[in-house]
Image (cartoon, rainbow, N blue to C red; front, side, top):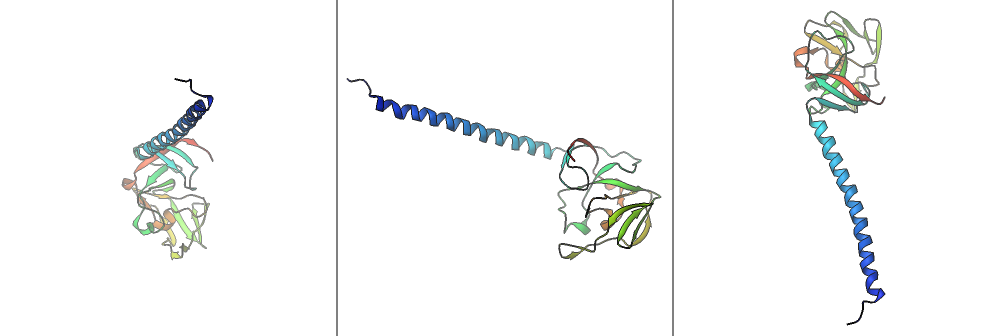
Length: 180
């Protein structure tokens, strides 16, 4: 028998190079899949929330049980009220700051929301071609309720669905890592 020619070795070394390249691609795919599974797992946990909405800084928030009394500035997770589900899925609760507590006065005047002496921005009449429900005039936040609002542009908050019952809140949120 004769020794294999150098031409016979060439496909074998080419094959090994291709296998190494494929292994590198598999690693990339595997890493990507594992990362997606890990992120999906974190997103599905009841004690963590990833926020991408502009009402509060983008980032990761730890969720805690609701304990009263709540104070202004506390971040809360609110179920999406039926009246605004045309604009926001009921499956993704709203992460909003508490802007007013029991006894505080909230007013909509001249198309703007004010709480105490602080301006929270415009109150819009429509979004996506549909009329938005919104409060008019003034209200005093009742006992056992809070008013959630953000100064962020076009924030979907209590100006469109009124005060929220504290007992309906899902959680209190504390920032873990934010990047805005």
